[in-house]
Image 1 (cartoon, helix red, strand yellow):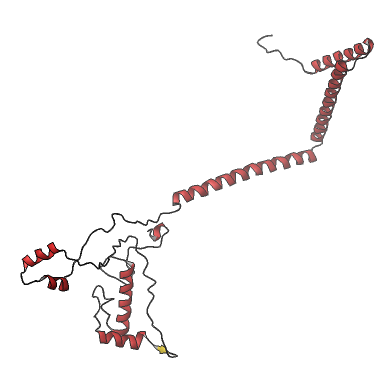
Image 2 (image 1 turned 90 degrees about the vertical axis):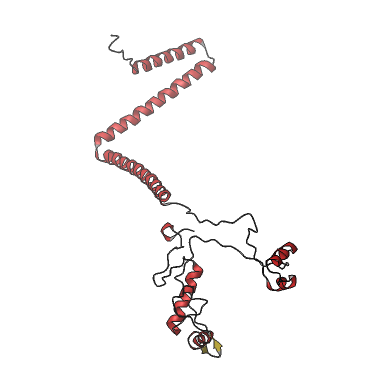
Length: 261
């Protein structure tokens, strides 16, 4: 699991008020916390919680008397146990759990009983089955399950995302700001300067005249191509188109490069 420094909630250190030489685990921490509570209330601790023998061990009578006097006060005819919740004990970052299972088999094979009987001839098979116990330590399953906690995003990825979003936002804002400033400056220039207004008016007038001449030229070509009239009318249209073409040609002078002149 991830420690608090990496946005997790596990720990590998004992709390400051619960010092112990044993390896830290949530179970050991909870036992140590309750042992300290019994010691502070009764001057001793039950052997179940006194895992490191740091406090005097309570006898069964002392344990019952301590529970009756301090931990199990009676109110309104009901018992309330004041056992501490030990919130300072967080889950450990690394833990390995091995499971133990009970078997209801005989436990000893005939060959094992014969081998044990050779060690001591006074041990009968019935005696060994009734008084001996077998403990087999082995891997029940040739596999294991591992739980690993990882960060969704690291600090570097978070800063990169923030920097990318801020860069995109500031870039778009800068472009928009420049466009707005440019638009307002042009509007203000036209409003204040009469020369600028005259220039824009002349430019618009020339554009309209140019569009009008283009429309007349297109109309003339269509009339010359599709509308069949007399020779005189066709000649007049052709002359008009020729004059218009020459006028347009003169309006776009051709510049000769200096190295050719």
